[in-house]
Structures are given as structure tokens and as C-alpha cells.
Image 1 (spheres, rainbow, N blue to C red):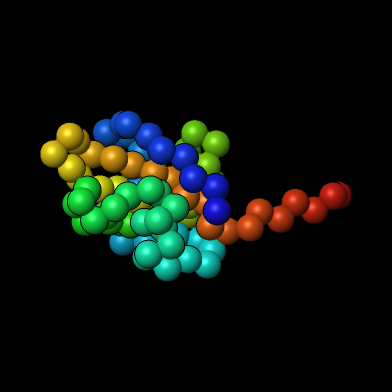
Image 2: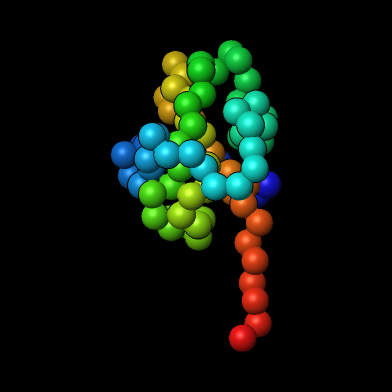
Length: 85
């Protein structure tokens, strides 16, 4: 899993919170990969609705809303297969 953290407004990231992220994952594994703990609110999980900032469509978007503001992480769970032509 490749994880990137961001301090951006969630509205600026094309996220679908009704979609499941691509790849193999569990709620707990995504929260752990994002580095969020129980003291930071209840994380919610969605998927990128389109490629964004070098991350593929379907990557997990993990968001926690804290007193300090939103915390976001994008976790890539799916294995990317590159085939030579």
C-alpha cells in the first residue's frame, strides 16, 4: 500500500464516498495505513472518482475530521500491472 497525506479541503479531491476503493483492504488496514488513531475522530472511507495528483482512479480516500481540521490520506491498495507492448 502506498500512502500519501494531504492537508487540503476534501471538496478539492474528486471523491466518491459511496464507492469502495479498488484492491484488497479492510477498514482497519486503511485507517492504519493513513496513520489515523481513535483520538482523531471516526475516519470515513471513499474512493477517487478519477485520477488525481498522480493517484489512480479507485484509490482509497481516508478522511478524519478533527478539532484541528480535516486530515486526509490517499491509500493505493490495488496492484498496478504494467504490460510491455
